[in-house]
Length: 441
Image (cartoon, rainbow, N blue to C red; front, side):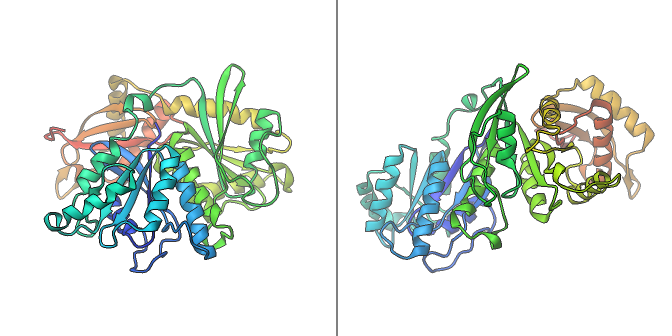
């Protein structure tokens, strides 16, 4: 199930980044009292009233600006608007309705997307409330007075935002097709891989990094199984981004991972596993997606009997947090092992949705505790009463214990490994929720 995306937009210095930081719960964006400070779009996961969504911060929009950087910021914000499900339009009550506010409002109105209008810096709700009425002139909806700095009115604002989301039932509709996001750095062969699977040159392939700017959906059926492959713009380090628009392709890639069932991280065999690869893989891991590591261009390197083992060792070291992801060595150019990769996609997708009965889970748990006693601290030993599975995608289990502080990370990993040995779960992360028996919820 993909999370809705909410883009925070508005002209410079109206408090967008301050609002973003308050809603995200941490200081992520750079905040300075100077227009145009937020150059990079930042994203964070937010939850309100059990609704989860991805929040995007953007640079200030100045539609009439001639400065090249301000033009780029405007272009980037337009990409954010295009990507978003709901737009959070922020204005400043101290400055009133400015010409740029009117132009931004006109632009947002043309998108036909839901817009929530926040009037920021209302530090005294009683004294300044009348001034809020001026913003009705934007004809973009009811203005909601807030003070991001003092955290006033944020509950009403979030209520308005989530009211624009599609019903959860609609988001959870099952589809026959397996949605696969192809992620990775620029120029590792993501588009070539999809073209090989499709059997046609549907996507532009170039040796120029960053050729693919949009997330593109390509449906295909293989051996009776329907797939939707989502190609994404290559992600690269911020210091190496030369075209500002690439910076914002990352959000499209995040959005693709959000709505995919399986994420395939494509690595260039000539470059080996890099720090950037580990960060990109982390996007899929943190969101609990089924994952596969595909080492592409395997046909183009010199090999001996130790080459593959060395590569596997390097991947294991750099991606130690996701040992569950199967590794496949492929060539998008020649089609080497691409069919095997398709079979692996089906396998990890099934494991991602695998549900195990409570009886079987507890049989494995009891046997695991018999083989390795639960840890103790200061004479008090951990007791795990039972375990039950509460959800899938990813498989999520609740462990009921006497004291959650006694369940060390190493013993939790031991239990996870026992579950994997007993039930497989190849290609999918496993999540644990720890509850003490006297907790009601």
